[in-house]
Length: 467
Ligand SMILES: NC(=O)c1ccc[n+]([C@@H]2O[C@H](COP(=O)([O-])OP(=O)(O)OC[C@H]3O[C@@H](n4cnc5c(N)ncnc54)[C@H](O)[C@@H]3O)[C@@H](O)[C@H]2O)c1
Image 1: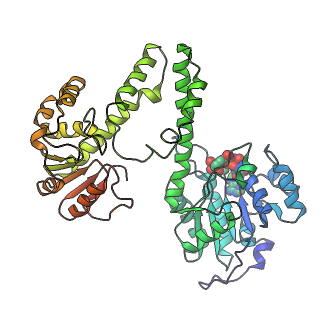
Image 2 (image 1 turned 60 degrees about the horizontal axis):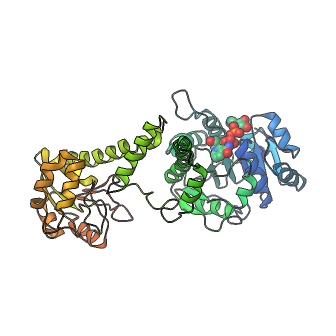
Image 3 (image 1 turned 135 degrees about the horizontal axis):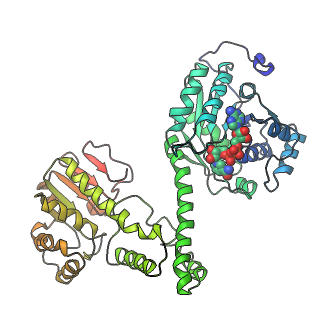
């Protein structure tokens, strides 16, 4: 047993002594790009920080207050922390856990051979953390900072810690997931002005301790569950990659057309109402209407004509079709035959049926002898929609028989649809439709394509398309 651990040599008890979590001492495990910056910045916030790495050179560098990586201002911050006796470093992870109240884990998570996540560094560190916890008597919080697949904190790290410590998560020690969003090159600056701070935790005590650590730099810590926080980190990076690839595809199309792509995107990014905004960014049903499908086809066609490869843009229609198929499959899987649709147009408040994706779902079901009824507040059998039907028939000739039969499927109000259905499919989100769906719970099954309620209803016959 190491010297630090000896200090704390006592039996574990379920009654944990109070620890001052005002400015807890923090061990930072893994002194790479993430860990070195955390070590420096947390010490600047007044925490005593013990950096831990298996790499003795990194440990020595941190001990000396010199930066193991190239990162603006990091050297000065580390030097300052060492001079103020707030930073030390060691290879002894067990001892560091015993010596601190919170452990930040930022070891590497390389890609494994099968393309997944290689957990070997996490597992090895978790075992040592567990060993340290076994030697402690006070409450301790382990904060996972690695980018990992959702579920890995609880399914990979926690079992190792519990096994090695003999302790129980939640009762004896806390777990949190705190994703890292800092950009290399401006990491220190970002630490003090983070784009957001997310803390996922399954118990309040752990959540509060971690949120309090970040309070000096972010008053509005976003609190959530561990799995959501894990997923947020992945989603963020996939989104950034999507933006880069999208912009590059626009550049590839613009160049042969001799259009300045930067002028195009300079204007594009100024639209913060629709382009760079929460709009269109919630999982739900397929896109449709008179513009999006048509323009997506047009741009993919243009790229093709220019002999330019745009896999992202050119696969949007295919991705959209998958969403239509998914909705159809949900209905088939219900096992019921009487299906009601609340909402016919591609969005609420319009009677525009052109390329409404729900027509594809209805068409597939009608061909399979489902009994379909529909209600759309903006459309009734007397609405003059002949021209749109002509359009639908022109663009999608396979829809013609269903379109001809559509007026007979329409009902004057949503209640009639509910009464004549075993399953209702919700395709629009308005107060009227919310009320109808709420009244339908318990009477029919509900397939929700638009997340009609903010919180998922716990009703047994309810299912959402992407939640
Ligand atoms: N680099 C970034 O900008 C960034 C941003 C966000 C998230 N992340 C994630 O944070 C994690 C760390 O990334 P990084 O870039 O800092 O990695 P890195 O490879 O630079 O550093 C990891 C460090 O962990 C050390 N280590 C490995 N096993 C150890 C153990 N058992 N005990 C102590 N130290 C151990 C390694 O020696 C290494 O110094 C990864 O999951 C990464 O995906 C990185």
